[in-house]
Image (cartoon, rainbow, N blue to C red; front, top):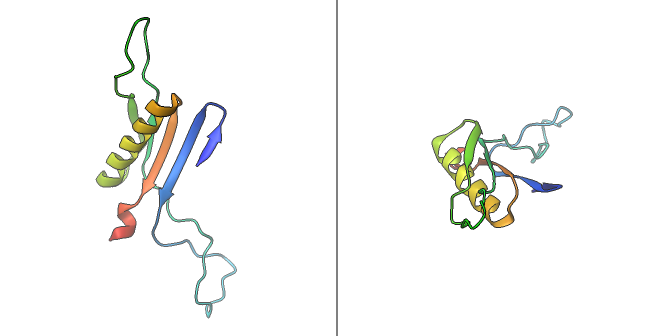
Length: 100
């Protein structure tokens, strides 16, 4: 999670870890700790007009496509966080790729 002013970037996932360039071939665990980034969604807080209600869903768009499950999950999470924080929220999710 990265907070920057009035916005947030959330990235989570698991899967294969990228190998490091200086890795020893006999080491048991080698990696740089960077699983692949998944689909990226952006949600904006819902607009509230004078006398309006905040029941509207947060407008969400997919910036980087990926697997269908991860895309749906990143859109849902970004919309929920954006509605609760009233911030623009970017979410990248790479969970389904690690399950296979």
